[in-house]
Length: 424
Image 1 (cartoon, one colour):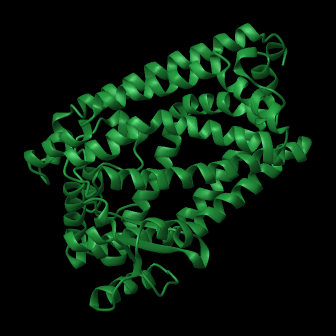
Image 2 (tube, rainbow, N blue to C red; image 1 turned 90 degrees about the horizontal axis):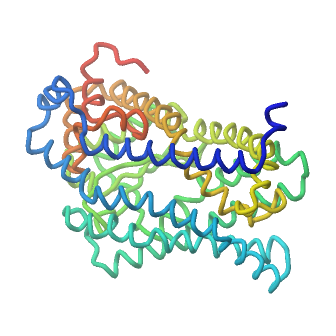
Image 3 (cartoon, helix red, strand yellow; image 1 turned 30 degrees about the horizontal axis):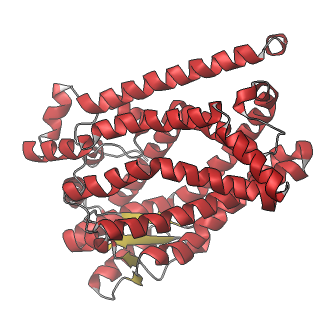
């Protein structure tokens, strides 16, 4: 406590610049690791046992496509955000909105949060266009023309900004209404909000982008339902979405909790894989169901919110002491820009925690897929086809895998099937 009491605005500001420099160095290191990939000859030799040199090269080409755009954009994004905060741009916008409409959650806070999120969207637009359309088109994945991409982008941005605005306003309202008790109430409210989104997403959001249909009756559907029953899934339907109208990527995903859980397959997956391979990929998603990963993810998010709440309350007085940070009272939306900048920087340092948890869950799901089907050879062929179809980086840097990957690399997933008794 004696040390904390000695913290001055100057020291807090110096700590921020140290954090910024450390973030820049770490990000440069991770980007460099992507450029060089895995340099272990033994690892690369093992990869060539399952993939051709041409497939490895194709995956590397896709991974490095737009590399320098990605490298520069991350620094530009943080630089612009920092510039706008440092020059008082957001503080001036907040003051003008407040003077014009008056203070209040549904007045100044609502308009300011919308304005701030729209600024972020505009900053990211050139990058999103290049990576989401130009790059995907040049690599042969996109099925959209420029106007089709733009329509989808605007639709996604509108929904994203709307949901983020509601979430931020809920957060500010709880902090404003419950004084010291907000630290305990915020996780409950935000956890409920996350749960609502998880439940409503397949019902309200997915239909805005895809035609979502139950899988057609037949032997393939019966096989998937049999796997679902082994996994303890309570479902009568398996859904298919028409990803083919957007891209050539193949995938499947699991969403929802409780009785509202569902597994969704891309139509590309069904079209490009054998029925047994598609069944293996479905079984992987059933593995997520078996281990209740969505609920566990929400629970971990709840605990993280408690920690962040206590941390924010503890450091707020020190952050507010630096004038250009733009902090006002604890529950002011004027704090959001600087908080977003700090979160952006901090996320890179805590990324390995989320990465390793996610990879652990993916291994559990892969192990479950093998147990549910017993088709090791088909599992291997499915992993190989997924990697080739999506042009996965087959020789990624171990540092990036540890720090940023949500899934284990293709080789590790394949070799899991070769273990005598894969561990859950």
